[in-house]
Image (cartoon, rainbow, N blue to C red; front, side):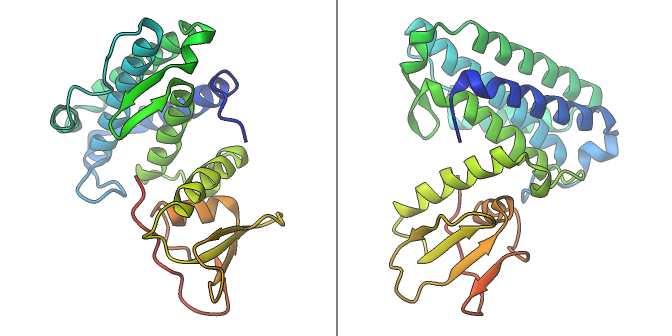
Length: 238
């Protein structure tokens, strides 16, 4: 389950191709339709993915040059850019996505080996530059699902689903708001224990279903709980 940026670039390319293929099919009505994210249309999701690529280019540029370049000028500027771009015609969304994904690929290619060790300033605090490519892959895969256009967590590549599950559960073990639970994905004897194991339910299912439930993309209907009962409520994901 690597997050090595050079090993993940191929997965980013494949995820980008899948996203662009869907964006190419959208009509104006499709872009204006609701996404899975409350208050956001599909156009909002597409605009976010474009501006996210630009933000990651900023971080890679900061790592490469040593300049203190933030991911976004401000949270308000980020939100305004998404809102301003959401209602564009499909062709403009597609052209924007193509441009920004190409810029991101060029920024990755321009990184010298030593620059991957730099710390960069994301919206939620400092991050190793080496995680930027993983961050972009995560955005592409999760928000492709949010487009509500036929791409589901079950369509995630197995390696991505397992990496996402590992990341999310690692965060839960340090989160005091996380309910106690034991997580186990199909085909693995490995367990992740969150909180106090005593009386905690064991939740089992495919890696993609566990991850999607933990990040609020499904209701967990395909998961099993032992002993029988309701699924706990995970804390809000990023």
